[in-house]
Structures are given as C-alpha cells and as structure tokens.
Amino acid sequence: MSTPPFDGTGQDDVLGWAGIQNPPSSARTAGTDAPHSPLPAPANAATAAAVVAGGPDDRTAGLTIGVDVGGTKVAAGVVDGAGTILAAVRRPTPGHSSEEVADTIAAVVAELSAEFDVRAVGIGAAGWIDADRSRVIFAPNLAWRDEPLRDRVSDRVGLPVVVENDANATAWAEYRFGAGRGRSDLICLTVGTGIGSGFVLGGELFRGAFGIGAETGHMRLVSGGHLCGCGNHGCWEQYASGRALVRLARQVVADDPSAATAMLDACGGDSDRLTGPDVTEAARKGDPAALHCLTEVGHWLGEGMASLAAVLDPDRFVIGGGVSDAGDLLLGPARARFARVLPGRGHRPMAEVVAAELGGQAGLVGAADLARI
Ligand SMILES: [Zn+2]
Image 1 (cartoon, helix red, strand yellow):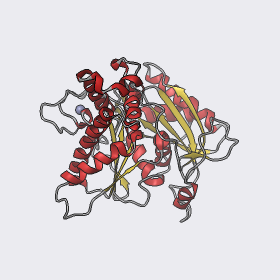
Image 2: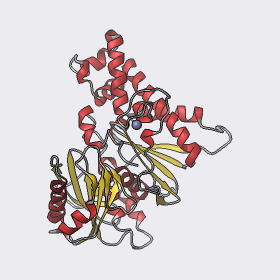
Image 3: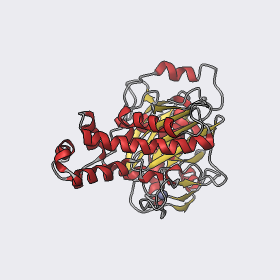
Image 4: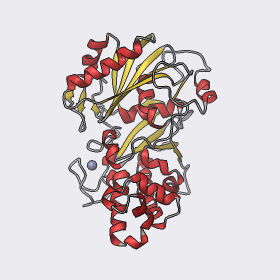
C-alpha cells in the first residue's frame, strides 16, 4: 500500500509527473451542469454501469465524498455507486499544521455537501493508516504524526469518515471500476516518483495486521544497492520508479551527451532539469537512449512483479502512475522480464499485466467507495 514513505504522490511535481496521468474513464463526471470543475466525459460508461446492474447494496447506495490528500493538493469529489464523479473541487494542501489540513478537508466537504446529499466521507491519504482506518500513523510529506484524522474531520463535518491509504484506495477503485473489474486477486502498482501499491485479495482490500501492509516499493531487491529514503539500501522503488528513471537518464546523458540529444533537447540542454516526461517524450520519438532508460526501468518493474507473483499469485497486475504514461514502452519490458523470471514459468498460469484505467482520480473514487463499506 501507500505511496512510498519518502516519495509520496505529493512529490510527484518535483520530477514532473503531475498532470500527465490519463484522464479518468469510468471515474468520471456525469452531466454538464456540475457545479464544480467538470471532469472529462466518460469513456466506458457502459462498463461502469454494469457494475451496479445487479442492484443496489451497501456498496452502491447513496452518494459519498472522496478526498485525496497528497503533499501538494487536496482533491475531493462527490461520487455515486457506479464510480461516477458528480462534482469535484481542489485546494492546495496547507503547510505544516495538521489542524489546517483538517480544516481544508472540512471546507471542501462542506462545499460539496451543500449541493449534494452525501452519507459519508472517505479520505485517501498519502501515509500509513492504522487498521481501524482512523489514524494516520505517519505521513512523510505531511504534518501528520499519529494523527487522529478520522475524528478530527468527522467532528468538523458531522458525517461518518473513514481514512484509507491513498494507494489502497487507488487499488480499490481499479478493482471496482477500472482495469481490475471482475478479478478477485489483483495487485495495483502506482509508479510515480516512487512505487505505491495496493492488493485486493479474494475480493477484499488487504491492509495487514497493523494497516500498513503492501509497501512493495520498499521490498529490498538489490543487496547494497541505492540508498532509499526509508533508510535501507536496494529498495524496489530505487530501481523501478520515476526517480529511478530520471537518475538513470541523467547518468546516460552525462556519460555520452552526443548519444542523448533528444533528451537534452527536451530539457533545454540542462540535464539537471531533465524530467520523467522528458524521457518519455524522447522515447516516443524513437530516441534510443531514452528507450534504453524506460526498458531498464521496465525490467526492474518486472523483476519485482515476479517476486510478488511468487507470494500472492494474482491474476492481474494493474500499472498506473505517471511513469506508466509511457504505455508499452514501459509495460512491454516489464511483461518480458516478468515472464522471464517468474518462478515455475511455463508450468503455471501467468498473471496479466495491464495499464490502469482510472488515472489520477482513482484515489478519490476508491476512498469514496470505501466509505460505503
Ligand atoms: Zn525503501
């Protein structure tokens, strides 16, 4: 679960990943007269509608508000039982006070609930959440340290509130309305600055005994490898993430600038300003150096997925996050390496590796849906 402890989504802006995710598909805005920031029209409304075709239940009845709290922004939306965003608002995440963050969450909830009859609030937060879904144990990019977020917000808004890890909420949204529909066991990886991940196992969101499981970005893959913000060396996200991609690309540029002209052009000739999207853009133009970088990161992604498959045996990996904007330039090498190192390969079923469908709104939609449970 979780955006990685020291590489949460809030830091995605640093490397230029913010704003390049695919638009939401079934996580969408219905109607053109929504009072707040309409989002793009649905791409697969029929599919999302099918989710509720079996009739309403506790998970589909009524409207809830999902709030996605990252290091830089608080995004909130009114979401119905089919994963449709009816209205959305966004505010900057206030500086250093947990009270201010709670005030901002309460303000967006008040704004949205003034126009919609909502029954609960789900908060997806970039941090470690306790098993009761009430407290943020630790959030590296926010002011929260053992923060009683659920009660702090509930007291302000007068509605039931649940708190969930943002990557868990994203996984849940993909399971319910996105690329994991109809699957019982999926692993959702959000490859941004670091790796956020969530597991749905047997149709249930996996949290672990203390609520902080599924931190796959900090699986140690390389003995004595790169130092990670968590304090260990060789964590997966040091090799398969936006940060890893940029580090590798800058090294490639430094080693042989003449072979990396497309990436240098993309960053105005200053490799210190090279971003992940710059690498993706150069790769899309066929630049061999940029393609090499994405291939390398994809291979590392596949390495970790094979280990995860050895433990959890999912039927599908769903890959999202800013780096996945590179599409098959990343997923192709990931699939290839996954198939090459999967234990028992050739003698067992293979999990599919597919792109996420819900884009940057998935955390909000998933948090809203989890508030119904
Ligand atoms: Zn780590």
